[in-house]
Image (cartoon, rainbow, N blue to C red):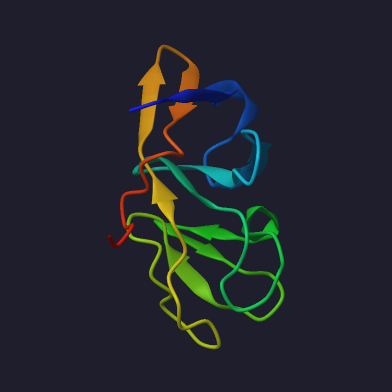
Length: 110
């Protein structure tokens, strides 16, 4: 696993998300929730809009454009119009530092 530094916990208040560019095509939304910190692809599978600009509710992130809500643990859309999941990535905390492994998506089908 190749974890890359994404942010510090102080940069993301609970109940919010930020966009993080981890190089190449690795734009992720890092989300801080009451249930933990999650990383999900920062592009809605329905439309090319950043998920990091949406609302956090529990362990879900809503696309602000059309209202699709994605499960942060699985990337599965819970509401239409999105029907395809988006990649989610392993997250490791080291003190206040947040690391994301973009090379090994959790829900990647081989």
